[in-house]
Length: 336
Image (cartoon, rainbow, N blue to C red; front, side, top):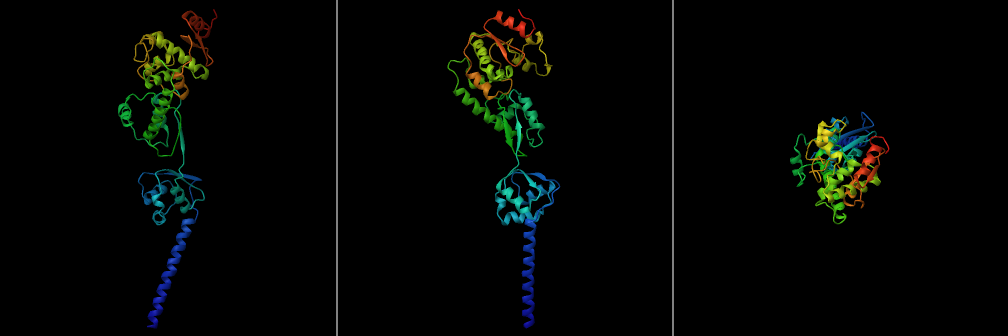
């Protein structure tokens, strides 16, 4: 019996020692800095990832993590319930526990993408496709299908995405960024429309957006925006053709090679404001906040014409004879 007790106690002691060694080993592994292939290693946690899937994503990125150990550590500490999808990074000196804590706190890495004022929808889509941190999900989706998915009653996407800088985490989808830009445009447009001057010859916020896109393309000089807007408002009130070159260029599409000829001004398209009265059917670019405000709060004056001075500013005139003199001076290079 004494021998049995001795062996039993020895077995228990061995188990305790083994447990202590295992606990010590686990604690050491959890808190020991990992050897990374670079100072920072980024990885993406996909939506719905289990702790083991998170560990696999880290390992695929080059982080030497023990998958089984990480999964147990996350579950036993209940940090697994806090991990959200997104882009993260492991840093030099990180231990598995520090990395898990960062995941549980949702400390994601961030990126920026800028949609520039005056960009077309095609340029916005190209910027999304060219960004390596944006997850591509839209493929060759049609414009109409995209706008339906966004819940828009307007099926032509041009001008409906607000030009701004958007912060996102790696792995964010192209659709999510477009949705954010669309919602931002709706908010900015609604606010601008609510602050519009009375009796404008504009029937809807969308028409204000169309006008704002033309203003955006016509001038980047802040003080001239409201005056340019006033010219177009005056022309709309009088039923005059808007006769603005950026709309012709937009209608030319790929045919535009940096120059407009007289034949282009006569070639009818839905956007040619030399051949068609009123506003074009859609915006021609993404309009910024300043252009939107200019469209709904134009300067009140009698000008009907303007011409570029060649330095980013414009010269305005109230009649055709004045305008012709300004064209001769600033475009043809001769004073009259």
